[in-house]
Image 1 (tube, rainbow, N blue to C red):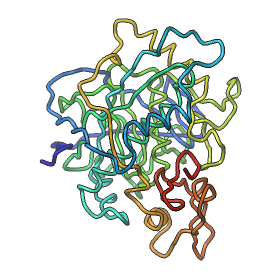
Image 2: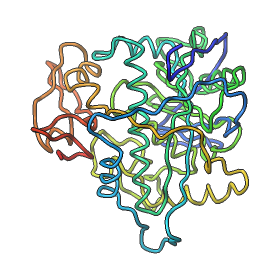
Image 3: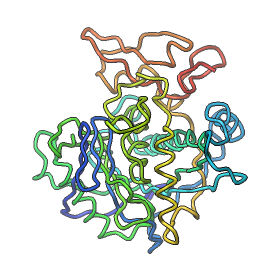
Length: 376
């Protein structure tokens, strides 16, 4: 057993996951970019999972520095018209990360990974980045922190292989399999996230990246499932799904007042808008409303887990390896510098390829790193 994760036995179990272009069925959200599914709310039962240990440093990104950057990027007050007491209540969502065995094997093979220990380090960094995205809600006097309950690697695929065809699985099947898996193991969590290698299809769409249910936090089976991409855009996908579970709908729908390409928008290309890493005021309002509706069932007021301290993703995976993860071994990055590098990571190939998201922490100049699309 490795510190920070727990292996789990997994039998023949079904599960389903989905993401679409912009559909909603019975509370399930699907989007071309992301979605959310509901799982079991905070049920502190058993305690079979091993809690992650707090790291002692984060390679230059110290906690005071990160706090200063949060305040600089997002502010600490409320938007016009919001009520301010003195400081926003601190809400904490403890997330159990379950990485399917095919995904673990695929991740270990990724350029720059090579071992399960390195994958664990990258998963911690992934959730560190997800939590950082949630700090954009501080602008609207809302403080939501994402913490890791545990990282679990089942010993076999959660979705039976007979349910998978050409690496594609129906998202509903994936969700049902995940729910059955969680029923068989007494884990502790507020929300469980299933990270799979399989291509999720369902609800009439084929470009699903994640799936989940709105208003599921602190309720039975608060779960989501996402496609593991081994790249930095996974941060945005996961943050989008967690936004759904906390009560947020899509931003770029017909009747939405928040039309920018925010986190909760669908079909947004990497770094296609300055708001790419921000939650909108609409999202903040929806989350506040949902948390208030929980009343005595609010599971977000307490946590036994430490805050996540990790290296930034760009410090763990260099530019070359990130391009190779996305487009193969013959691809290399275009060596821009400064803000140009931090806005988009352009990979060079014999065939045209789309720019990808530049990971936070990539070195962009002497003694400078990428932060929120800027070289600082």
